[in-house]
Length: 148
Ligand code: HEM
Image (cartoon, rainbow, N blue to C red; front, side, top):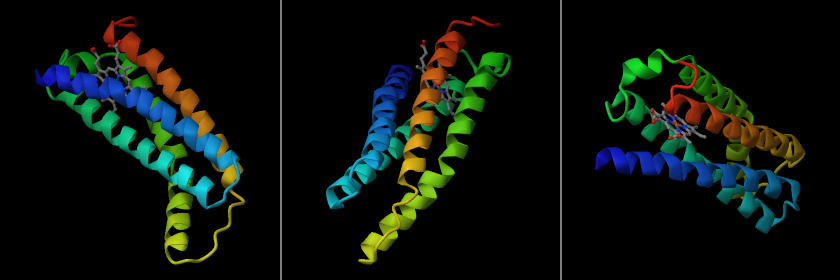
């Protein structure tokens, strides 16, 4: 039962995360009015929720004895490829995360924000969306032991 629930949550993070990071990209390219910024922040929040779901449920599946066991995954090079791609996504996230936190704080204080990095953040979000798609290729190969 737990195995089924955790696997479902892990998969549901995919439409949520991919949709959110794409929506963040689109919103950052649009007019950054109060409404536009609200769209950026909502998409950013959902992207954060997806990351927590992916990592939380993924670690439980791999190391919580829910699937094939830690030994299986730690011996499959595709697992390291999947984790490597995830690490790149997380490293790329440093700039959007710190910038958007600064924007949220400034707007909360009623101060103005410098939106000049918006296009760069949109490009980063686009690259992250592409990396998520690559992770799906790795995940499905991993589940089937394709490169073992
Ligand atoms: C710490 C991060 C993660 C860990 C430890 C992890 C671990 C796992 C594990 C153990 C499975 C089950 C594989 C099996 O059936 O043997 C799985 C499946 C899957 N994961 Fe992850 N995962 C992580 C992040 C992600 C991310 C970021 C994505 C985004 C695309 C993702 C997409 C998938 C998909 C689509 C499957 C289903 C594969 C299939 O059944 O064909 N995972 N993951």
